[in-house]
Length: 276
Image (cartoon, rainbow, N blue to C red; front, side):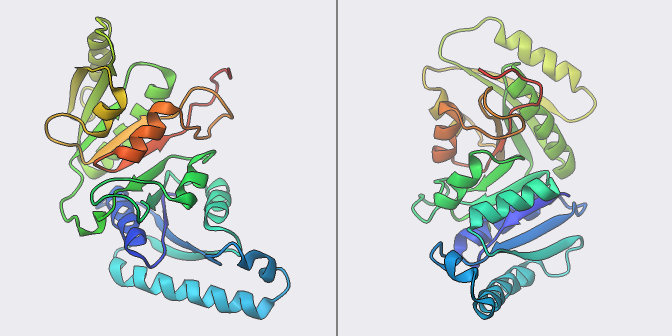
């Protein structure tokens, strides 16, 4: 399966839809737009005993998907599904485990500033333990018309960074974007330029790659608001312990995804890494 987009008929759902369609690329990567029902936790107990109620709320979810269908238009390879009855985070998590998408795409909270990311409760629950990469669209992203042409990846040669780099390369290739390898060090590290150059050399002939080492004590602020021209997408890994192939947000990635000035895609830690 390709891209899974968590959608409801709100501005933030439309932000997720816009980013998800961009990540699918112009070649038409298979995409599923999903709406969960009910959208209120208090409805779950009712759902166990009232089939008529379930049919009613499923119908409401289908009407929400009609709004997504209107945006998608005639674009090929897009399916629309309703999930439930369950909370949105649980429904999307279980569906992602079953279908193994390349990424789940979500919108930001209504409390985020325009152009910034702030995870809401559904996204927070989905991020912790997600079985696949999760991309988050900043508030207002639905208004963006420019394509993704620059993908940055936080890279320092660790297994988590290698996993993030592999995902970033696939995305950059699909959307025909340049790749920017960025390392942020709170203290000067003479080895980082060599690490980045080695990664760039390995990628020669696949995508256009640039490298950059940022000497800054504040890693979070540097990644959340990269100097110079902002990338169209930042890819970063999650911390190196916890269940295999799940996202467990460490302190840096947690804060970056709360502050970023552009979409962020968080990648689960790689399989085969030892737990701590």
